[in-house]
Length: 176
Image 1 (cartoon, rainbow, N blue to C red):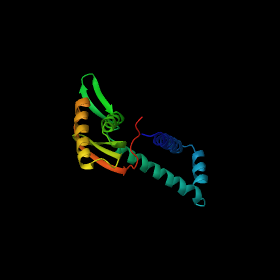
Image 2 (image 1 turned 120 degrees about the vertical axis):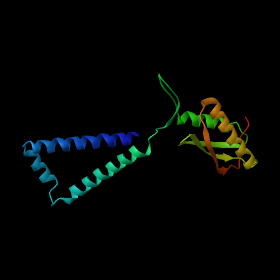
Image 3 (image 1 turned 90 degrees about the horizontal axis):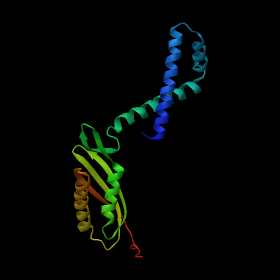
Image 4 (image 1 turned 45 degrees about the vertical axis):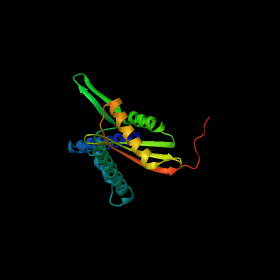
């Protein structure tokens, strides 16, 4: 969860906690919150009422979406023992993919992305290449080497490796 989403959750929770406390006070016979609600949300003041309602609804929808869209987090469970779980972050997998792909001649810029699939992971690699690279041959080798290296180092099953060539660089890498 991003810091913005955490802040939204904190404000949203605080707002509803205060609102429930005020409604509870009214139910117990305290009349001061009634005047607050009557003055703040008066029918003659829609410029306050509707923006507040819109913000509450949009924040609720955003938090609901976050709760559904990221069930697995940004890691993969490697092993689960009686002592606990061993997890590897997506960033660690991406670093390994970058290292594997950078070993190929003619590959310039590499941007991997990890996707969770039911029985392992999927990897999408966006790359820039030099014009002297045979794309079908090199991309097939990259796919095989990524799959083998991830299995060897992490024990994770790689189901798919998709290569996307973003650009063909006109400049060859400099030799220093």
